[in-house]
Amino acid sequence: MSNSDSRINPRQLGTPRGIKECVHASGISCLEACAKKNRNKPTRGRKKSIFEAYMSKEDVSAGLKRGELIQGPLRINPKKYHEAFIPSPDGTRDIFIDGVVARNRALNGDIVVVRLLPKEQWKVSPVYFCDLMEKANYRFH
Image (cartoon, rainbow, N blue to C red; front, side, top):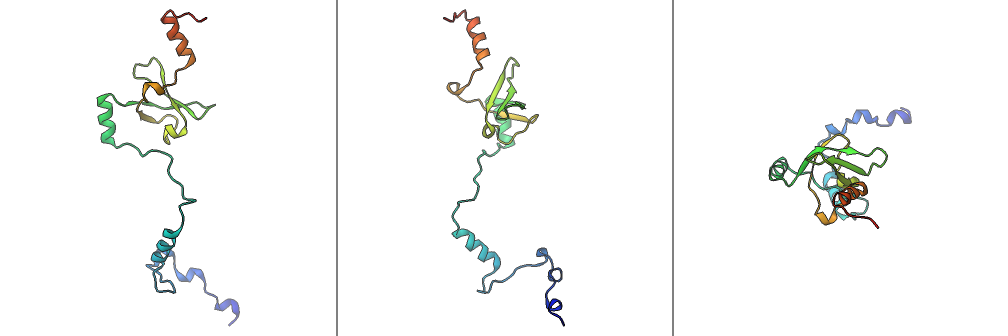
């Protein structure tokens, strides 16, 4: 028998799905050894989620009924992907969503639900601001 004949063919061993459990040389099961090994690893390299968890259907329903949430189709600016918008409920202007994280994994055309930030944190479009000032008869100097 040649050297190549004495080698084990990996196909003969079966697939990982067929193996119920393996035992490490120390007598600890491989699953326990892996868990122990991973416990001692620092969290460096593990990715933390940068996105908020999705709201439950019940919370969304209740928030929409109370008027705390606004629902609409998401439009992403094709030239500035970090800028997104949904129409306001009255249809007069858009609600600006600033950044990919604020968009929370939503894609263009998705129906989304948003909660408005406190008014102090709102960003107003310069064009809309000028229109408001004109309506209020404010004169720019």
